[in-house]
Length: 88
Image (cartoon, rainbow, N blue to C red; front, side, top):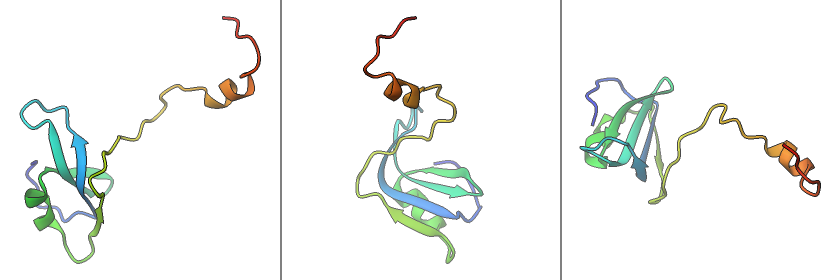
């Protein structure tokens, strides 16, 4: 878990987070404050950070994928040209 004293706005728990940290490759909870991760770790590490105003979401054991910004995917164009031969 990352060390923090910031009270989070949001805690997501009971999830599966792939951290890409070799020492701790999987986390079950994260805390977010002002749009940034302030804690990543186990539920035992993260849940005590919750305050009265913290929204807590139980993910029901689901995996979590990060949001991708500008992943350069032309979904709409592919859909419009689905029945046409593609020439590159």
